[in-house]
Image (cartoon, rainbow, N blue to C red; front, side, top):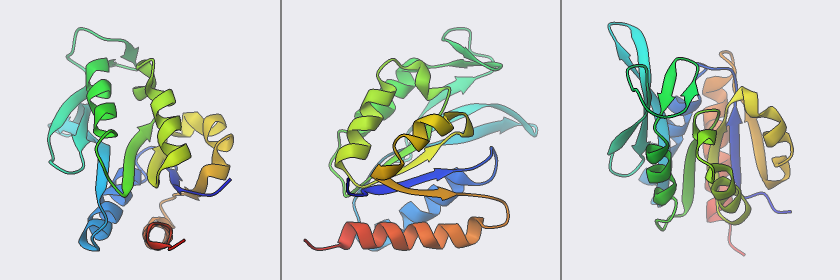
Length: 175
């Protein structure tokens, strides 16, 4: 099967989302149409209180999970807002040259159709998808669909350039 995109994995806090944002900004500057979402942590007084799902185009966001939420399934100390995941999935219906999904992880998996929609994207469109370390088996079984980049604190700057070049070449390839 033909590779269509990049899977980014690595330990929590290594910079997967930061890499995605940098790559998306550079590709957008090259004229690549990008759609989808990324996830950022929210902190109050130095303590993580939740996660926001952010539209890569508009910057509009929804709470994905928060410590003070009282509804939704639990992942760790966070209640997950399944409606926010649904909103993120609708962004994948927009036209684009590259589809961003950050991330395939335990919180997003609380939406019953999340993995099905991710599968549709990685089998048919150019993509950059971050994968939580807990999802290693899922990633291993889909590695033929894209190149897997393993991020570490040591290699993250070099990997960002590698991912950018790889995706640029995939998207601009003729034929």
